[in-house]
Image (tube, rainbow, N blue to C red):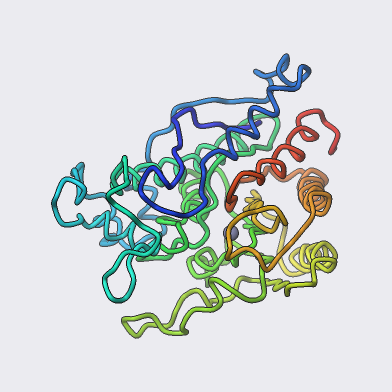
Length: 350
Ligand SMILES: [Zn+2]
């Protein structure tokens, strides 16, 4: 099943932010799929469209600091675009989206050009995070035992702060929510976004019910940060996943063999999980347009092979799985999701 949130998702420019998160890759993928006559005719068999609401306090508290959750959930408030100083949620958004330089000037942010407030961006982020819980429900309840959600994947969200455009870690939140409901005991989070799943690794360190694998750029963000935070704590971005697979620039041909080896190693180390969550970023794609994802240049064919491998892996083991969109920047990444989903819906990957 494919889950699509009907609430419009404006790109970052609407909030005055110059980051190539366009919001259009989900829509373009969906348009491509329903543009195929056979898929359009069977639309109700594979597509669930809902208007999602922002994630609430309760699930967030399963993985985040209560004080941070309080700061994030302040409002409703017109915020500083109404001439006030930023509220606590807006300050957290500014940190997570890196909108302020050390000297207090704005970084890739022009509030004068903004049509919407950062409080509204908070709401949009929490809605996209909530969809991961909804997607997990669908994957676990629907006879298909598979859901692809056109949102989610905020793997940089940390215990008491957001970074890398991620306010909350929807992945760990969704798994813990499903555990709290008694739907699952264990899960694996397999992260093939171009960037290390650092928040996921830090939030699940020492939790034997959730195991993590991350395949990512060996260098660059988030692995180029200071090893201590401004407040003197160890930077949690360096907490290892259960298995990390760093891929250096130029090693793209190693990506698939090393992913396959890592999944074999996961199976040797741990019992199979009750649930698989795949952080299915398209930003390793050579046509992705985020500068900080440029160190990996995978082809369309490589990424189809990646997605096909992961799909078959959980199918062969009869494990319910949710794939979330994660990183996708600019105007071409929709091709990666479309090529996978059109084959999945037609049953060509089974
Ligand atoms: Zn990414």
